[in-house]
Length: 240
Image 1: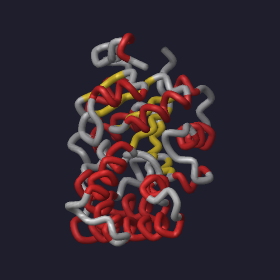
Image 2: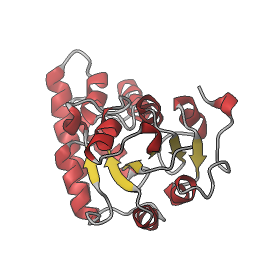
Image 3: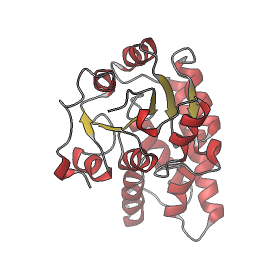
Image 4: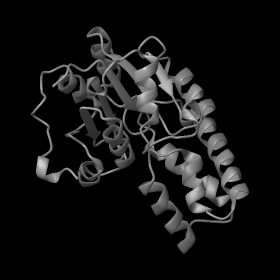
């Protein structure tokens, strides 16, 4: 296996523990468009939200309002305001072990890119709240890749190009959703690590193409730095 030179890490549910904040922001956003708790439409919309975790937020709303772009855009704007307001009120906390993981990667010469389904403005708000500028090399939103977010491979490939990594086999991807796994697989990453601190189950992560399933991002440096390349590997027969 080629040595890992680039780690592309998801935000919500992987490196920051804000899954509940994200869910509340989605609920508030769809409520402004008349889909309220206690209705069948609300239940269906939230199932779609859960299934679509990791995808660009505007794409999620387009899935809920497939025939009304204005509604999708309005809901997305409400989501952005709600989530950014929650950050301002409560701040953000890293998943335990995240800061140490970033330091280990950086100390070993592995470049780190954060990738997300948030808009650029929300990503910038998140980065300001975390003060991680000295611990990462790059952060990308779908807006940085022409709107093509996960499960497409564009953000991972853009990170590779911008950070001067020459081979997709030198890339590792970590995330908590099926779309993260699909993104890593389509980009050709040699390590696609699903973490169990966020949205999707082990089964969903393996279905998406996880090569490894970890309890949390705290285990990621040991994996990609060569200490534990087989200990968490998912059975090959389980990867689809």
